Length: 286
Image (cartoon, rainbow, N blue to C red; front, side, top):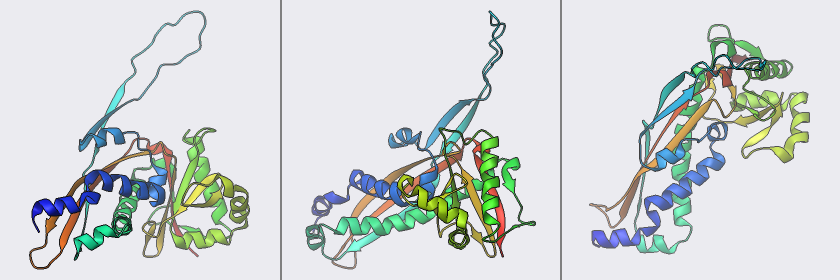
């Protein structure tokens, strides 16, 4: 089989097709991708691996009494979103013609690749918790907040209050919180959560298990636990921006077997634009 034949047989595995299928699956199921904005994805789609973001810091305001004395100067801050994280995936198909005749083969492979990529994204985006504003952190690694089914609701109320006080949560901007399954277990024993979840089923986002203290709750087994300590991360979509690319998709003939190989490289990056739109609890479970 020639290289040209392999390329022809693998039309279904072109980069554009993979980008659409993989990104669609991640957008729907990857927990942390439900909690960030993708405002600069269009720049990433053009192939750039570094995106410069300029945001205003101050805007002059004042009481109006017939004239405006000063407009001031709206200072700006430049930040750089780098797509410097990479995950690869690869697989071999013994019989390319048989594989191509199976309409489910591409979806099956995409789902397996998605699981690996999803884990990497969740862990990476959750690490942005370190950028939360200092005033928005409850507890510490050396002074963990003890959580029980009786106290967890009060702690979530504190999280929501921090985000409201910083101006992150408004009537137009809703909050989210990401927890580990061990913390979810406490929530399921909390009457305030179960009552709110039953009332809010029709308004939940994909992957959400309900709402508590106005925060939409997402659960990920990939993040939030370090031995016996837990990090609970809350925020709004204004806090973190994210962009990604399918950098490469390659097909080649295996050298030692009658099979063909497809491999790909997924790159991504994130940036905390608004630390005040993140809030954290460092906790233990009692």
